Amino acid sequence: MVESAEIKSRIMSVADTKKITDAMYMISSVKMRQAQKEVENTAPYFNALKEEIAVLYSRVPDIADRYFKLSEEAVKNGAKRAILLITSDKGLAGAYNHTSLNQCAEYVSSHNDTLLFVIGEYGRQYLMSKGIPFISDFNYSASVPTVWRARLIVADLLEYFDDGRVDEIEILYTDHINGGFGKCKQTVLLPLELSGLIKPSAESDETEYFPSAKDVLLSVIPSYLTGFVYNSLVDGYCSEQQARMTAMSTASHNAEEMLKDLKLKYNRLRQASITREITEVTSGARALKRNKKV
Image (cartoon, rainbow, N blue to C red; front, side):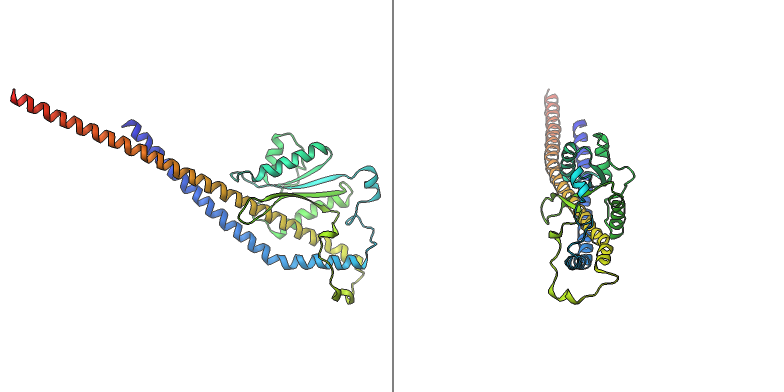
């Protein structure tokens, strides 16, 4: 009976755990759909910005600005690099964080002077445990990405870039793939790569800019970078939710298998106990009959 009670207690515990994993799966599914909807709503604006930057740059192709290419001094003396690393705030998301963190650690080990800007508490705690330095006052959450937060992040990064403390900023995040595992992606954020911009259309040749095309170009760059960072945040967030959904689905499946085994074991113990009780009653009845005959 003691063993039977223990198994019954385990069945209740596993069943409660399965309820939690099922709920977490549903929550992550809702969060991912909401984030994807927000990206769809803002995509037209940022795509228009990309096209406008390409148009503006075609007007001033000889612009000597560090937003578009490394300075001669940086090329000569070696560019001061920085990485914007996007992780999650929490765990229980499978290998989502580990892939990007391992790639970041590998990169930093071969580029010791790299500055690290980390988004997400999980990444900060991991790097701290490994003794890898990062910018401590750059403290942003990875949960529920917003355009406003992306704008603040870009403002901080541009402060370092404009002051000359870094010459090149790369972004390391997990690119979301619907229905599958996200792919860890590392790309240059600054200086801008013109190959990634939309080609200008022929209709835009008559547009006039005030005070000049160059001034307008430099003024819209922060907004373009905001869009880039925002999309990366959402990609990372969706990848996190996808990984958590997969992890919770696996956990729920394992819980179901455990419940089957535990219930089977519990029923066998009950049957054995009932059989033993019947045997004892039958044996007692036979003994009473023998005593009466005597």
